[in-house]
Amino acid sequence: MSQHGIELPVQVSPEEEPEAAAPLSPAARGARAGWRSAAAVAAIPVSALVAVGVHFGMRDRGLLPQTGLYPGILAVLLGVGLIGGLIPGVRGRLRGKAPLAAAATLTLAAWELITLKLEWLPLMYFPPPGTILQTLVDDRAQLFDSTWHSLVLLASGYAAGVVAGLVSGITMGWSSGFRYWGMPVLKIVGPIPATAWIPLALIVFPQSNLSGVALIALAVWFPVTMLTASGVSNVRASYLDVARTLGAGRSYLIFRVAIPAAMPSIFIGLFMGLGSSFLTLLVAESTGVRSGLGWYIDWAHNYSDYAKVFAALAIMAAFFSTIMTVLFKARDRALVWQKGVIKW
Image (cartoon, rainbow, N blue to C red; front, side, top):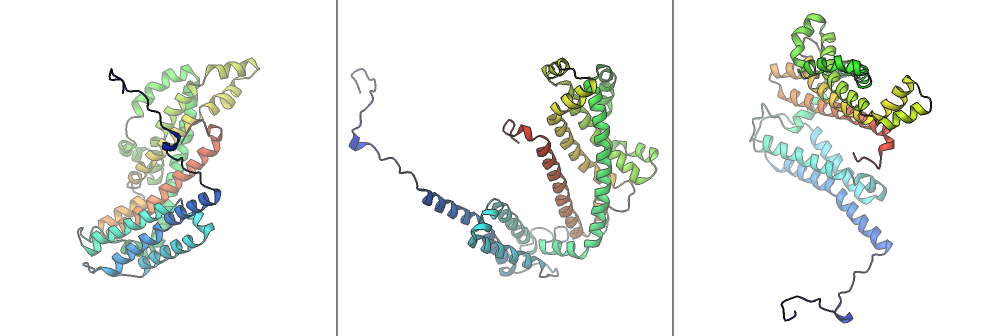
C-alpha cells in the first residue's frame, strides 16, 4: 500500500505462485464418468431397499389384505438397479432415468409409510400402493374398456376442434375481412368455459357421445384459433414479398409460406387445446356416457371404493402423459429447423 492509502498490485514470485491443477488424462476422465454413472444408477437399488425395509420392517396398522405384487415390483427394481450398476452398457442407459425411478420408488415408500404403517391418513380414503396396484390387476378389464372409450372420445373431440380451429385461425389470420367479423365472435364465445355449454350441448346433441365430442371440440377450438390467427397475421412481410416477386400465387403464399412460418405459434395452440381437452373430458363423460375414465372415477366414488379411484387416476396420468409425449414428438419433427435457434 502507498502513502496515500492506494492499494498497489503485489508481485508474487514464481516460487509463490499456486500450482495449476494438472488436466486429467482421458483414462482418468473415463473412470470418473464411470463412477458418476454407477453412483447415479445405485440410487435405484438404494431406494428399492428403503421401500422394502418400510414394507417388511414395520408393522401394519391397517387391516388390509396384502399381496405379493408390490414387493415383487420392488424386487424387480432392486434387481434392475444391481444389474445396471454392474454392466457398463446398461448403466449408461439407466443413468438418465435412475434419479426419476429412485424418486418414484421413494414416493411409494413414503405413501405406504404414512398410510398403512403409521395410519396418518385414513385408509378408507387413502389406500396404500400395494392395494392400488392390486386393484389395477383385478379390475384391468373394466379399466381397459374405460381407457379405450376415453381415448375415442378425446381423439374425436380434439380432432374436430383442431380442424375447426385451423380453418378459422388461418382464415382470420390471412383475411382482414374475416378477422373484422370473426374476432368479436371469438372474444365473446371463446373465453366462456366449454363446461358452461353442457345444457345447450345436450339439447343440440341428444346423444351423450356427440355432446361430449362437441364440448371437447369447443374447448380446443378457441386456443387453436387464437394462436393460429396470431401466427399467420404476424408472418414477416419480407417472406411474402420475396415469394410474390418470384411469382407465387395466393394458395402458395398461404400453404407454403404463411402456415410453415406460423407453425411455432400453431403448436402452442395445439398444446393449450390439448390441456383444455383433458379438463373437459372428465366433465364431458358426466353427460350420460356409460364408460370412460371420468365415468369410472365417479362410479367408484359413489361406492366409496377409493382404491379404484386412485387406480383410475394412475391410468389417467399415464394416458395423458403418453398423448402429450406424442404431440411433443410431432412438434420436434415438424419444427426440426428450430433446433439450435429456440430451446424447448
